[in-house]
Length: 229
Image (cartoon, rainbow, N blue to C red; front, top):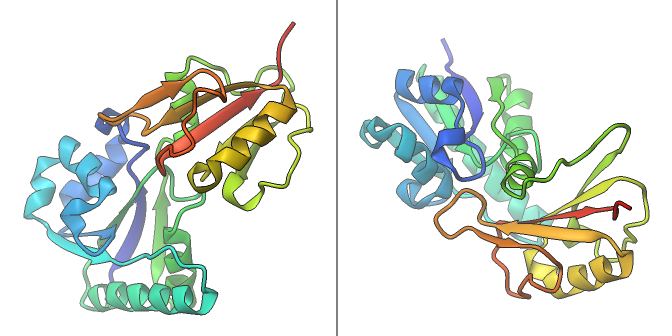
């Protein structure tokens, strides 16, 4: 019997935001996979370890998931990662793959999921608190009220967009183009807040676009709301 793999969201950073199901799956299964070459250096691992210390006694597997521009090279790395997981599943082990936030939102596990499912393996996704929900709560901001839509955008790919649709914009993956994003925000006339490293010890909160440093870290999320009268 082949094992089953769980793509488990551990939330954005605060270990107390992990779900009971995520904690149970870590405790009940022997193999824990995390993104990165060194499992214990993974942010997802450190979050989980704070809530489930016994994770350190599990079989830990690092899956290298590099951020590359070359699509061919990145696909090769994804296939290598999927092959490593398939070896574990073929020996009948269930695998709990930990991922930041939620496994359905801009998650690198999705690439592995597509390969594993195409190869006939059983994959189950376990939701986690998404980073934009955690950041909005940390800012004490409702993301949407009444009939307002929410637009969730990977800003690194959309620096030429105008933020001109009604509702709230959530800009993710902004760090590498922050100066351009800040210009876009200024032109939008929106009320801007941001959280860097939400729920982590290094968390920082910004209450305007001007406050956000151009060198803000990778885990920076921006909420841009229409000004209310």
